Image 1 (tube, rainbow, N blue to C red):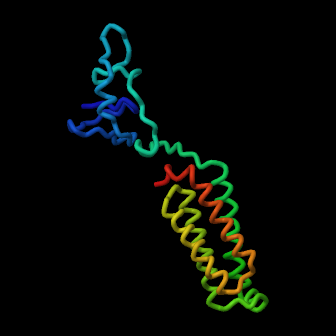
Image 2 (cartoon, rainbow, N blue to C red; image 1 turned 135 degrees about the vertical axis):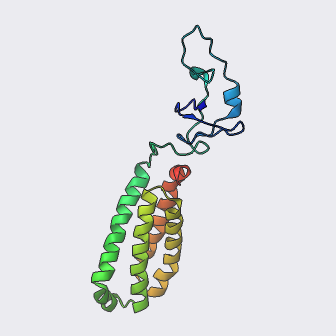
Length: 185
């Protein structure tokens, strides 16, 4: 039996295995080997003959994995981005679904563009939800959908403000993800 020095979980480990299944941390063999055994008279808590106060704890990201208690922090910029642009995508989807024929007549948008924009808005909502749940494919999907939306904005004859909003949202997304990317699954 081996007890993980980070979470104190007892488990059977192979001699070469240095990974705790409970806290998902890689156990550094050099750090574990460098720990001084605890003398029995000091009364310090020792696990497998190692003093716990001398164990070097590696940072939880990126090499240590995601802890079970999920202490990831999204940050204010990414949270605000996700809330605002999810709301805009929901409104965009509702607008295209309920008032599509009126928009098509007023703005002279082709029928294929109306269907494409509706599907794009629904896919973006799914990607925003995935990104909220720390899935990296949500970020890839949003970047891909925004890049795909650039030529569709020009070809469908939508107002130039849609093109500007797409470029601005793509820049904000990349900036907001720069700090949270290492925490993504």
